[in-house]
Length: 117
Length: 112
Image (cartoon, rainbow over all chains, first blue to last red; front, side, top):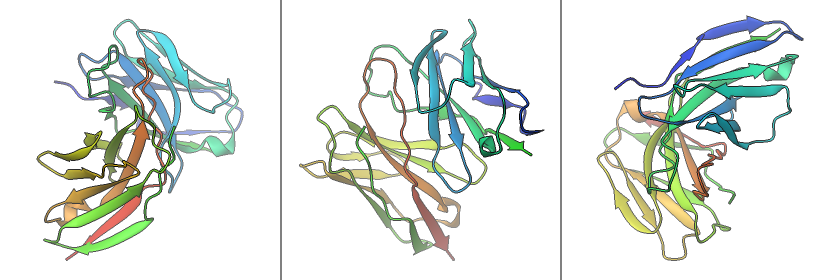
């Protein structure tokens, strides 16, 4: 069973640029969630994709967008980067659908560390 | 989503039992309580989840009193490798949008 993988591991961008982060979900999982974690804080929910459609969004502006592909992998795109976007971006996969008592067991990847200068 | 309150940090010694309490006074009827563990530069890892009374798995126990306004994560005989941030989360599995809302967590430091 392959775990959640993310690429790249680290990334440095300048203010105003655009970035795309990628995530491969765990085998058999159809739901991907993205989180932003600033230094010293807990992860903050950005949005979730279930069967290729956005299925919930946190308090993030529209310049944060995403995609989920038929194989359930996902991308997070951030446009017009700001200095405050510097953070660890985490992807988590899970098995969505009918509640089965284990919904909160999400499996996280190692994250992508984004630095905006 | 119910807000949670946890201690910012805790210290313990190897071999001791550690109990981390989380307060969630506004927990809703459908809410579950979930704990995650996070090591530096890694994604959080699911530890345990419960609704009421006591839940135990191979790594931890979760105690939830009858009023469900708090919960206690119990780690038996901690080791140095248990040093991490522990997050208490409360939420309802409404449909398929199972958003996790993390607070600031509790930094547990296990000392030799």
